[in-house]
Image 1 (cartoon, rainbow, N blue to C red):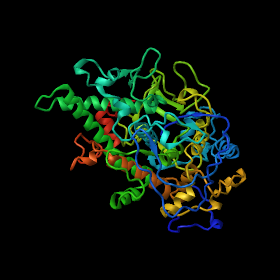
Image 2: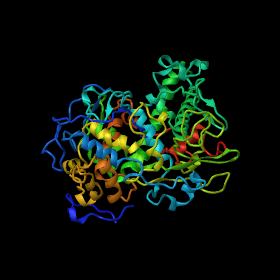
Image 3: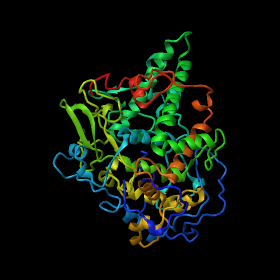
Image 4: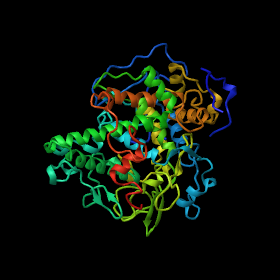
Amino acid sequence: MKRRGRQQRDDASGPSRRNFLASLGAGAVVATVAPTATLVAGTATAPTAAAVPPPVSVDRFTRLFNLPPFAEATPQVQAALVELGAPGGLLDAKDALTVPDAPRQLIVDPALSVNNPNNPTHTAGTTFMGQFMDHDITFDLVSTLGVPFSVDASVNGRRPYFDLDSVYGAGPTGSPQLYEPAGGGIKFRVENGGLFEDLPRDAGNTAIIGDRRNDENIIIAGLHAAFLLFHNGAVDLVKGRPPSASPSTVFEQARNLTRWHYQWMILHEFVPLFAGQATVDDVLAHGRRFYTPPMGRAQIPVEFQGAAYRFGHSMVRPSYRANMAGDLGKPFFALIFDAAQGGPDPADLSGGHRAARRFVGWQTFFDFGVDPFTGVREVKPNKRIDTHISTPLFNLPLPTLPFPGGPNALAQRNLLRHLTWQLPSGQAIAQFIGAPVLGKNDFKELKSFGVDLDQSTPLWYYVLKEAQLIEDGLHLGPVGGRIVAEVILGLLQADPTSYLNQPGWTPTFPAPFSGAGNFRMVDFLAFAGVDPASRHQ
């Protein structure tokens, strides 16, 4: 049963029941943090008012709440966060990676991931669409993990809109390496890596794309390739419409159509999966209460970038079936990451390689119904949003880290980022926005760390626990859902070029799975020509 309604929960009533690429970090890590006397320890008591700093520049981050940090950035606090996020520690799901044929068995035998339950309301591809969206709006270029850093001095390497600058770069003129020279240079380069299209690569297998992070793993690379193909299909469709137009006009029209169908999916498919339909409906009906950027001047709040939107890391499976026929005609099962792997065709799903089996069969990741070749419904689920993270994410391969140094455990990197941005506690935000505030007994597992994390909890951990306790891990709870929904919807609404600011626009491309007037990820992949009906993957 879900627990709702009370603004402040009694500490003695903590429940015992349980039941989200972004990006994989940005910013280097240092081993120690000097004490910072000017920081104020966070508490569960919020000020009576919060001021949102005015926008300075869209290439900077901002704050959503003017609340004190959850703790001082002392060596003791840093040590506690490192211990909390350590391999084998509290956050580690302890998946059985050493059993024979582990990548396959972790999918077919839930008992091998007893701490890491499936989410029946999400398909496996939801994780990677969330990661793709993150890479499209935020790239922290300069901060240092674990060391307080000024938001005013921060640099966001992406435009803070869902405008696909991670795909288009600076366009055919500014980023000609991304485009085919023939036909006016308005179609993307897409190359073949075996049974399926691969990202274009140089002689060293480095992907030639608008954001290098979209080659971190096979699935995100395949998703990026699908966007390239979707745009190319849009170019063909626009060129076929009279009257004839210049290549530059065709490019702009195709880019707009690609962006708008993508934005439609974000609003109508993915944000409800992340935040819950009720939260999305409330924001649309009553407006954004906390994230209010002016038109054309949006920035990414650090509470979103550094904590709440990192819920997706909890949704990652330890292993996936990448495709149905890539491994000598058999399905290719692999761990998402395995730092022990190497060579030109490693046995994990890390990116940066070209080989015949390294492609995506999308029927595992999104629900196309019954597969026309196997006769069964092949889609697999995500993991629930909770305080257990799949074990492979505690030893990330170095190539997946954008900067050298620091811990390889994703959980440690996420927690140290709370010191970087001096983020408020989950309790302080919950109280300020009028959400139910989880009590000490809900975090009794944190008491032993000795720095009051059970009373003033890092926002990322709070968001995960809130989803686990209040929403059974199916989607985000009141704090996480409010932050994620308001920021994503705010970015769409503040972008003067988004489809929301094109009066009356609805999807115009075929929607064979969703029907006229709607458009989902399965329709997107079908138009790109990579759905199961297009080829046996």
